[in-house]
Length: 407
Picture (cartoon, rainbow, N blue to C red):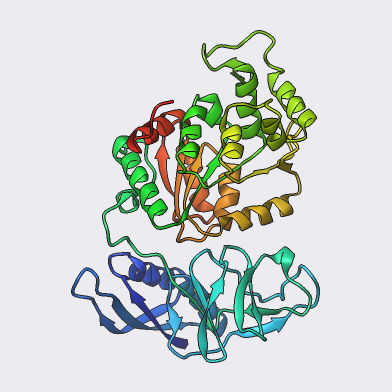
């Protein structure tokens, strides 16, 4: 048997971090011995424990230590990170450390250094001239970069249960349609005010169902009231918003009468064609062609938006970024400073955004289908919490709780 002593500290009892660590060791056929444990006596006191972790082979022990590192347990023996230089652009060394979206530190030149711009499923590059550690997507690594390999010298800080009663503590259980939505949405409104007071940005990731369900005017009110700092979506959201602004329909259905309008099935294509003729959404607003709607509000109030394309897009609108790597980079650029993300009636763009977000960004997923929230968590955005609701009902209630004036 080979063994290693690890240490973990923080709110490891009430955040269930210690039980998760012990479960991981047992599930991976390892053994543990608790050498020391000091439990905080007050609510704000941290707890600390040291464990001897044993496994049948060095290889199995390293697998266990890698899993424990993601829960914040690090070997007591301080080691420097192992750096390997890349041999070609866009390819990490074979043993590269694959990142999580949790706050991460690396030990380099006898100091713990924070990893900048952390996101999941990337690598870590250290600049030997500045000693700066950065999270780098695979596609952006360059030949000769110094890449962190293995788990030695890497420390991850797991998320802990909130010390304060807020919507994120209240919604700590799995998503359920049985939760009292009015209380949840009140909590979301408080979180939005708090985020704004802290000087952080609020991101909305929206799907076309916002428009289909009649929620467009409520999202406009949020934009006008400065409760939206950046908008992510796809060709569908913008197209159906513009269709509703130009023709009063969404996918051919009248938003006033909630019935299919005659020969209106082609309205979304005519809307795209109109915007293409103008040169883009911003140009259409300036030329007075587009005078209302979500996209109009973004342009009018200088709210940046990123429309990422997909293979099924009609048109698309000229503003849609069809190169997915370029779209990812543009999204990364606008995620700086985001403290709260609302993902409303969107699956693909919500998952894509979740992959880019730090775990410390409060993330709320609103969808009529509970499976969307589950899928988001399964793809790594475990900090996401869910509200089962249609988009329009959620946005209407949110505007009411934020006391936004009726238009």
